[in-house]
Image (cartoon, rainbow, N blue to C red; front, side):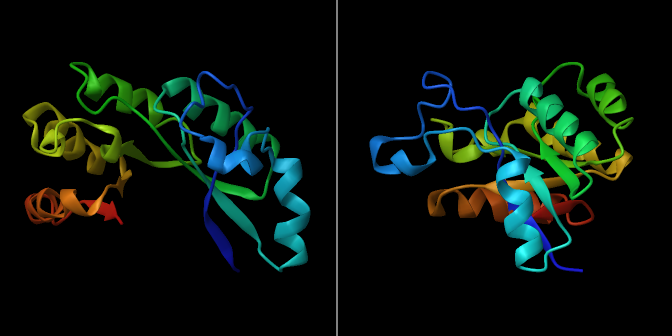
Length: 161
C-alpha cells in the first residue's frame, strides 16, 4: 500500500496562518480531507499521514478528529510542547490516541539556533520512546550540527528527517 507520508489539513485563518505569504496565494484556503481523498485514490494511494502545520495542541486534536472521521488518514504527526514541565503527563494523555504517531516542532521558526539542545527540549524528546512516538525534524541547514548531536544522543529514538 502506498501512503502519502506528509499531508497538511487546515481551515485557513489569515492571522494564524500568516506564514502563508502572498507568494503562496494558491494555498490561502481551506484544505480538508474531502479535497485530498479523490486525488489519493485516483493515484492508487491507500492513505496519508496528517502532519501539523501549526504549533498547537488544538491543531493536533483537529487532525485527530479528521483521522477519526476519515479512514484514509492512517496516522497523525502532531505538536506538543516538548519543553513543558508536565511533558510526562501530556504524553500519557496523548498515548490514548491510536492514530497519533509522533510529534514535530518547527525548529526553523525558533530564533535560538541552539533551541534543540535546550535541556527541557531534550528531556521532551527522551520521553517520546516511552510511548513509541516518533520525532520529525523540521529545520534549516544551519541547524544540521545540532540535529546530528541530538541524533547521536538519542540514537535509539525514532527521529524522522
